[in-house]
Amino acid sequence: MVNKQKKKTKSSPVSKGTVITVAVIALAVAGGVYYLWTSAVPVNGTTPVFSTASNVYILAIHNDQGYAYDQQSTKTGKKSITGQNLDPSMHIPKGTLVALHVINEDKDTGSDQDLNIDAFNVHTRHLKYFEAQTINFLADKEGTYPYYSTIHPEMKGTITVDP
Figure 1: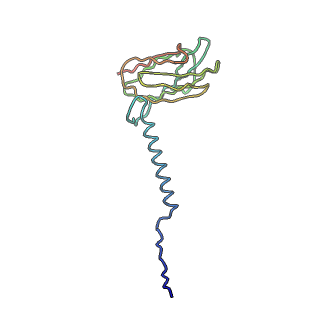
Figure 2: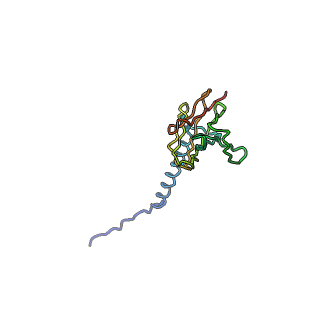
Figure 3: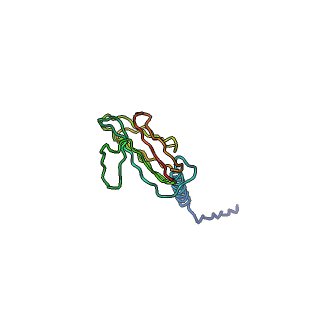
């Protein structure tokens, strides 16, 4: 007679499903941390800036005077494009983290729009009608710098970084 011994198998206190769940949660957390870390780095910086950004809204428009940028004020809570702020000059204190919101509101021609500030490495993609893009940059250099459109060269303005 052959002596048959039964093999005893130890059951693991942690199931395979638990290991998979923990791995998925760890990957999601790592992905979230990576996203927050990289989105906190301004386009002209190499390290994250964890401060509240100053919002600046620039509308790319077309009116009877041609193509222009218009600055939208958020102080009143109302949107008013009066034509008085065409190709506006912006003043920002040095060291400010700026969230620049560029919105294509050219409903007249439906043309693509863009905005560029070379001094701060700000370059939007070509925005279709009613598209928007937000770019964070750090106003870290004093002086007056131009911003412009590569699509419509007549669209321009200045940004002044004050001490």
